[in-house]
Amino acid sequence: MSVTTHKKTKSESVLVIVLLVVAGTLVQQGTTLTGDAGYSGISSGLFPLVVGSGLALCALMLAREVLTGGLCNQGNDTAPYVEAPPRLAPTSHLLWVFAGLVIQILTIAHLGFVLASATLMVLVARGFRGPQPASRWLLDIAIALAVTLPVQQLFTRFLGLNLPLLPFLGS
Image (cartoon, rainbow, N blue to C red; front, side, top):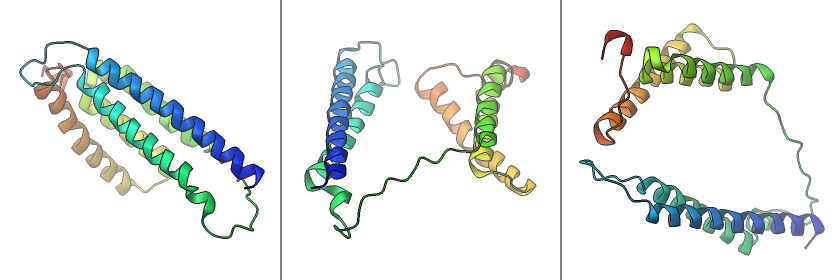
């Protein structure tokens, strides 16, 4: 086993331990949270349990990769391991994401959850994708509205949280 592979396996092992500790903490906290489940039957402890369980599953899959050698033992064993330098996103892409977050924070009280979150989604898509034709903007807007409207309804109807649909129209 080369030094690079050993170092990689050690760091992956540490990551497995950290993930298991965080997952265990979330599950433990989720079981201790008490609250009125309301008419939906979902209490405040459900989400820490779901996230903690998912995180534990990811940690166990990573542990399996570490124990079996994972991707390190595939392919040509004689080829040296060359770590690629990190690739940073251009500043303009990050500015689109930042602008979306700022606009959502500033407009959610006035435009409502659906329009503010749809704006965020469209600007984040623009940031990840780069320049695009006008027809793509319309498709992004349609997709964002198709995603945010059901999310708003889920929070309002099933979780009992008041997320106004369009506050400027009085709804």
